[in-house]
Length: 231
Image 1 (cartoon, rainbow, N blue to C red):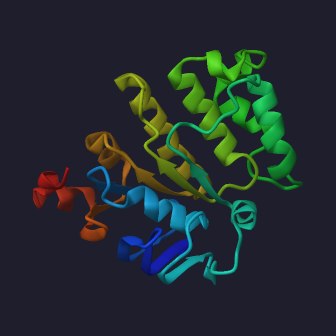
Image 2: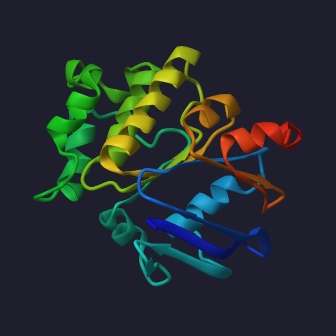
């Protein structure tokens, strides 16, 4: 398994937000990680990345526990977070954004170099000298996705990537996520309020409610179980 959570609990201050979260993902698998606002999805992603300490349980990446592994080391190992709000440098150009991140993450033998992301997102190649903050929401999200995969990305944690995007751009972006996972055996955890779009590309669906998993199955099983009251 690329990513395995066992009995994970995490929170903020004295409050435990998520508890007993367990799942395991294989290479190439896409997990739609769903639930209402405040259900604990983003908290779980932060715990996986090491941005929040675990209160219980364990996170393993490539079979190795991450308890004493810092955020920078997790990124170097291929665990990447695309945060809500895109996480780009708005005052830098597209090229400068990519060069800054590539300088740290693109080492010899890396899966995704600078040329690769321009091939994957041709519009960014056309906009190299454009200030990132002046681009459309869709183009900014493409840039954010590029920054998240530079180097040797093996597991993407995507937090609400469709926010602010037109429906046709949402579909295109999700298709790109699916193609990345299928072509490069990458794993993705997709936190998303656009439930239908997420389930369209997912291999597996987990639904959180009040900090705990209340459903774990395939998209077809989720539809048959009539889980919509959780949203």
